[in-house]
Length: 129
Image 1 (cartoon, rainbow, N blue to C red):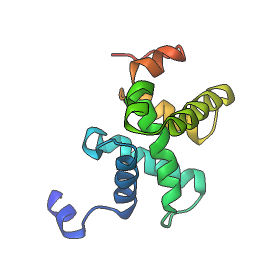
Image 2: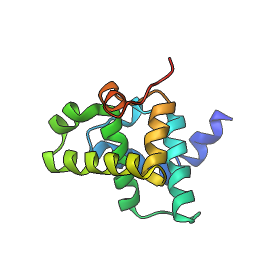
Image 3: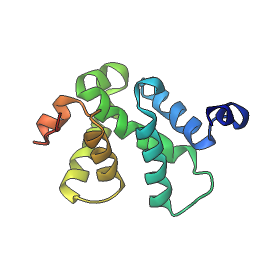
């Protein structure tokens, strides 16, 4: 079965997400494949499209995921202060709203165990380890 992956190559959606993660200084190999696959599925479900999504959609998801993975300090160190403020605003807004794509991405980071402790602590979210 793994041989089939070499024949057909990596899915374009996963390649797009990997590139978007790199934009925020997150190497794709530190993000579990299951998290990336779930992210792509969430993006496609939210857009209602089965075809290729615009790169901006992957970039937007990667920004929030990267912020959740790296935490505020490392995100600022690796990106701009404006990007960090934008991601933090999205995080606060999503938690206040309680539903939507951003909440789903945050919950994905939480339940997969990749969320940074400062993010979890700040929003009084606990991970089960």
